[in-house]
Image (tube, rainbow, N blue to C red; front, side, top):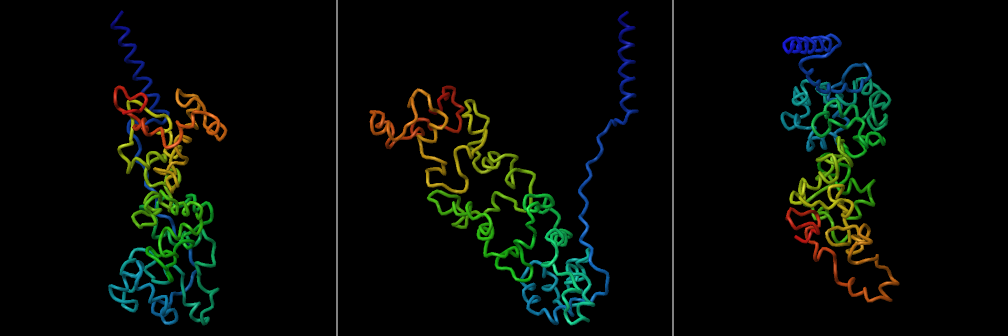
Length: 330
């Protein structure tokens, strides 16, 4: 009987495997397909005039381009060299120099500079202008631009960058990243003026130290980590868990207690101690109640408030690995 049972069990397993393969299963996982290079926006059909013709009128733009990242070919041989922009862009549509972005320019030249005869990136839809940039800039930090928070809000490449008249590095329209971000995110950037802040205004950090403005798969456009806390412990590794004794708000989110952009409180806390702690610990052993003005003026509990903080005793407030660290005293 045992041999019959074993035979039936093996036969059943084989039958189930064959049925799964028949339905569409596979013994090996299919390879992940890499994202294809986005197609550049289609330019109007026409004849090309050449970079030399463009620079005959747009001499100022050519002078700016010589000092920018788009001009490696100019440094290699000059804008009037046989290759021109093709020195860098030999495999793309941009091998046509200026016309790689602006489209065929002969009709524009023949019409004495009629702007309707050429593609002006500043006068077309934001998404179309960004698509032109993405035809080259579609890898690494730009890979997740399509559908990102900025893209969805009609913020395009030309909202922050200027190829022909930049004011800062990376072809920015402002002198630096912080000033550029402040043009929209004024309230957040202004927190850098508070007493405790990230070292942005000192030039040691920038918004891009934590965020990838071109798009990420993480919250808040963070470069690292699927949560805010994972991004924080990328630098503050000593706060990384798990701990033997966990303080509940810590693994949930660092911003429960800290404002990462700046605060007038110690350690960039969102409120002063012990008021911050009393947001959760309202009925703990000490103090028994939340302090407020009436209590301070009419109670002996006032001496437990001034000049004191919970962190004076609970020094391991982010969590403790000590066997007796339940109260985060060590």
